[in-house]
Length: 110
Image (cartoon, rainbow, N blue to C red; front, side, top):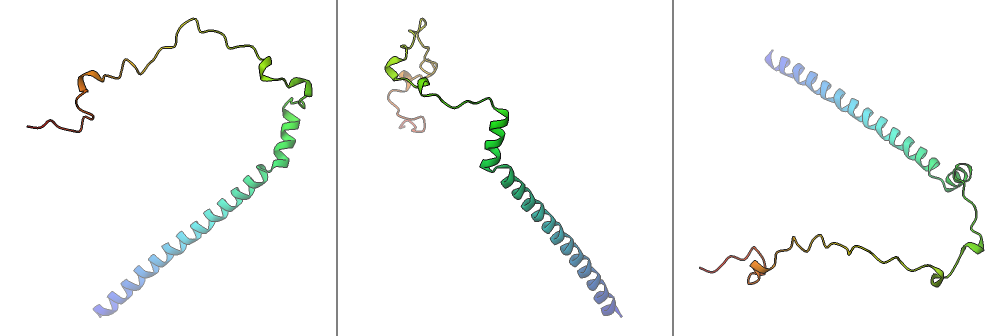
């Protein structure tokens, strides 16, 4: 009789586990389908023709006229800095006290 109870219990446990596996597989299938749909939508949204049409419609861009191009020697010189640039790392670097040791990982000989 006990063997029958153990067998029925094992069958119920296996059926519940099988049901959970089936639910997980269905959930994975739904998620894969959702990802595939999102990828297809992204491909449609990312198409160059669509982006070009949106750019024409929403951006006030005009074609470059050949008179807009110029040589580099026609550009004005960069203005002189009135304040010299500050070296932010220079004061932080303290080399003098550790001149005889190349790194901090080398311990002194005893």
